[in-house]
Amino acid sequence: MTQSLSAPRFPAFMLSLIMALGFIFNISAWAASEAVGTLSEAQGRVEINGTPASTGAELRLGMRVATKADGEATLQFLDDQIIHLDSNSVYWIKNYHYDPDKPKENRSNAELLKGGMRFISGSMSKESPEAIRIDTPVATIGIRGTEFTANLNNGLYVEVISGAVTATAAGQTVTALAGQAITVSKSGNPPSVGPAAGPAGSAGSAGSAGSAGSASSAGSAGSAGSSATAGASTPAGIAKAGTAAAGASSAGMSTTTLVAAGAAGVAGVAAAGAAVVKQTQQEEPKASP
Image (cartoon, rainbow, N blue to C red; front, side):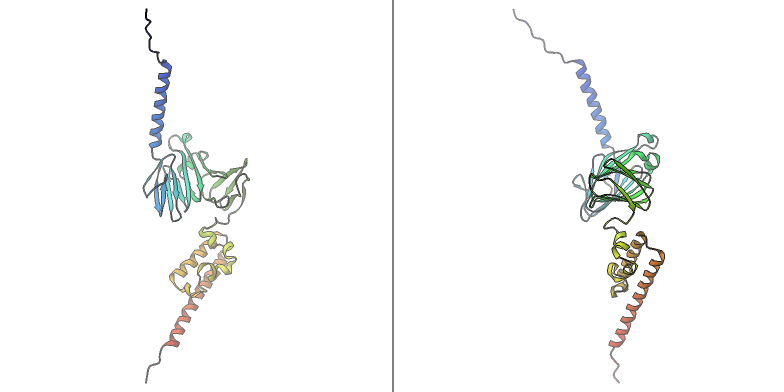
């Protein structure tokens, strides 16, 4: 007598679990496809997840925006938060959600993996500032409605332009206000706050008192192609002198110093012009009788 074998029955709860998981995965995939911002400007070589990108590209969760040696990029998010990436930088969009009607659900979490950036806060920083966080390899940056720059060359350097910024590292949190800077020398070290000096490589430090040395050198030909050289009599030379003056201003040089430097520049241009006229007059051939 043979006994029939019945096929094993699949437990009903397992089927329900699989259906529930499928629904969750579908929702997650839909959410991930939602654009959270755009690449509002791309100059030079810019990539998103390793693929060349251009102005107008959509930004989504999980994307990594990278700029090459000749590239810069500006990211604009739904709340009008602006991220400007310097060259040789990598920015990872880890989490972002913005709903002006539900500020408690807002969140913005990204990571600067390499290079430097400028942050300009949008609506989210006013409605729910605690929801914004930017991680770095050495510290976590908190935003309190602000504009700041951050640079990862030789540790982390954050300069606050307006508002306030917090930084947490090695179990310690510090707050910097406008005109101050936060420094973390390396991973594992605590953050410190001091006067802002301009991030390395920026226009500010290139023309600042720290780089030029003093007011006299800021107005001299040494660092900005200023009026002490004949090149300053050209428009390019004058433009460079103006850049140096702007950098010196951001470094905290006084208005009197800048005026003196500018006066020296004008005097130098005039002297250079007079020398050219005199030389031309001396070389002009005399008319034959």
